[in-house]
Length: 212
Image (cartoon, rainbow, N blue to C red; front, top):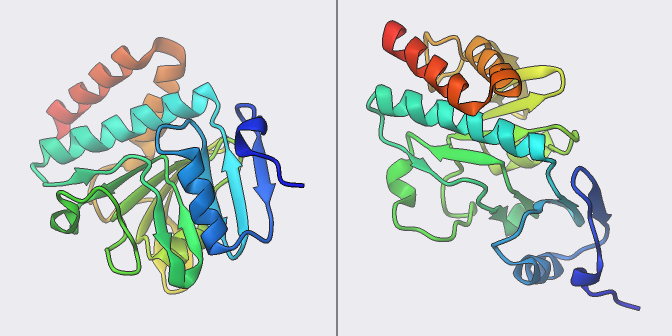
């Protein structure tokens, strides 16, 4: 017996795992879920995970994304933000939706594109995951060739750089050399939680003005 997706309820912070899902079935599920949805997906070798973020997840995603945009604009670096775009590679049977992502070095390749296929398009230069529920599968990002992955978890913020067939944790970001990214993000994400987004953004802009 098949159950329609609209009859399946996934509460915020929870996940649904579906096994033995073919690529064609995955594509059909994506189409049925639609683009205007609150859930995030991850697909690897027949296993599909559907997760609905918690409110705190969305707040953390927004402040970290804002910090990246402010830095790139202050440094006058051209970029294209693609939000939580679905990145797929049918040949590798991998797909993932970061919470936010940025094309920086490869930004010209995605200008004007509404859909991306990583079997022919480059991966984002920077992907961001808010890993409150420990959803992120590093293997997806590795196989899709994402060079830099930021993760904010309950344990704090970390930068992961792709080196061969694995990610290594780093204290610095190649996209923002000489900027204490780890310290800045941890400080201002915590400030959002205690003082709100507006004060955190103003404090970060003040740091940028004084230090860049």
